[in-house]
Image (cartoon, rainbow, N blue to C red; front, side, top):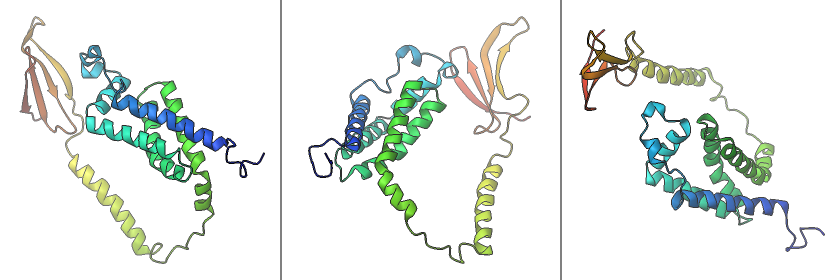
Length: 227
């Protein structure tokens, strides 16, 4: 029977939309009232350099309740919009950048293959739901480029934007690159014993010519160094 003439017929896109809505609400609820982004106390006790990418990501995202709630409500609201045939495209459009970022984070920080696959399937589902609109966008008549867009002055302006942007960053980074002594150093006496100051950190990058002294009690003192 033709689904267009039978309102009770189940459409494949309807199954996709409602399934995605359920999964997204589960993920959103997991952030609001569930364990998602929860970090074990045993992991929080590790030094930052020993924390895995997955736990580091969970702690970073879960550090701000506002950010966690924002992502959760985007997933919930976007998922519920998918249940409305009329507003499904809007829901998919809202979810698209969030899901794309989740896929990148899952892959780049080693969250897990299962999480990356689920997020990837949700992302593909959004594209499937948006397909009619995407076809309309691709087939739309594109206005011809204006002479102002292709003028020599316009191209010179684009080059200037790139040059100024990279130039300012390179200027700000002058002297902030690694030095021969950059890194962490143990402070020991002639017999290899630690003193009152156990470690000295010679920083670079954001901390230009910054030396941090850490004593046996864990206190840190900042100093300036010249090389």
